[in-house]
Amino acid sequence: MSVPRVRISPSPPALYASGLVILIALGVLLSGAALAQSVSPQLAGLSFLIGDWRTGSGNVAETRETSKGRSTFTLEAGGNVIVRKDHTDLFAASGQPAGSFDQIMMIYPEGGAVRADYSDGTHVIHYIKADVVAGRSVTFVSATRADAPMFRLSYELSNPTTLAVKFELAPPGSTTFHPIATGTLIR
Image 1 (tube, rainbow, N blue to C red):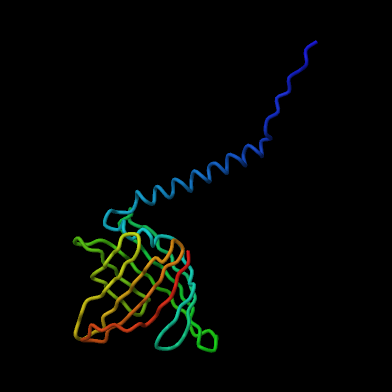
Image 2 (cartoon, rainbow, N blue to C red; image 1 turned 90 degrees about the vertical axis):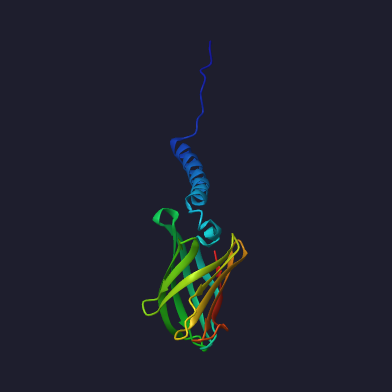
């Protein structure tokens, strides 16, 4: 007499679940590889900015307000443009809400240099120069004009999940910068 052989196999839900886990893991690996491959060579040194960030801390020097918010840096236009979108909530020294605003910035290569344009719907800043330390930091500087302030915006990666931000202004006709806002973004 022969004993029937019983084959034990995972149930369909278990198969689907394990397959889904494998697909998700593969997707994460491929998306990281795709990101590295899709950034244009001129912007590759800025790929450390890509992702979703939230405010760790923020201070507005002139008003003594604090800020909280979020920033998202995405690759656009086939990896040839990085777009930064922000939402910031301001709080008075008392902790009471003091307003909010949205911002957008487009970072792109032009004429062998990295440039950027910023707007919050009221102000526009054209950054004509970017000093990049690949994978570590970038400092954007606007044009020097006798009749307008000059701006400097810096991002420095302190560790893989923390980005220090500093926004500075030099009065018209001056090249001496004073901090306007400083903060930390956390991935």
